Length: 221
Ligand code: SF4
Image 1 (tube, protein in one colour):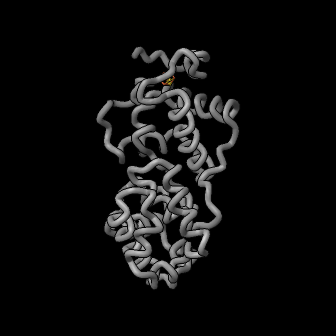
Image 2: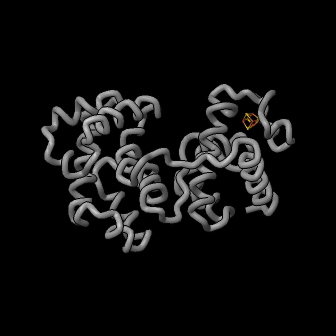
């Protein structure tokens, strides 16, 4: 890894923090809400995830035992706004069966090493790397950086990574540069998502982008 790239990544984060402020992710009232949100957000906008979460919250049903005791069709109808609701209901139930082993107590899971928890999460049906790392970082407060399609597109456009870089390689590349601090990882990911939504979109708005203005990105469309 070129030293130069390390400086660019850290400088970009500082600029994001200065311009956009601390992102305060993940938006949730509880760690359990983060977990359910991390599964519901697969292939779904956050707006629609919020609708599904609010359906659960308004009847005080965002609770692991209540969900496990609920009829599956009722649960599916509550999370319907998040799309793929039948699959997502099964995924959440799969997680809850794992959670039950730990007496539905996140602190019991957190006593394990990050490697063990990540492996266990990845063994749950329907939980892939991005969901597992979101849960590790934002719900379990384990030091893990979430990367996603926004991160991949962003680092590619900055000429830092290849277009087809693997999830694990991109994650390692960035984690080797960033300070080993979950607060930093949490906000770094949130800043990239925010920047990708307002500037570095599918069709990027380079002319008004703060990275272009500060000579940090020369990407040509
Ligand atoms: S200059 Fe364009 S490509 Fe580069 S980060 Fe900004 S929006 Fe994305």
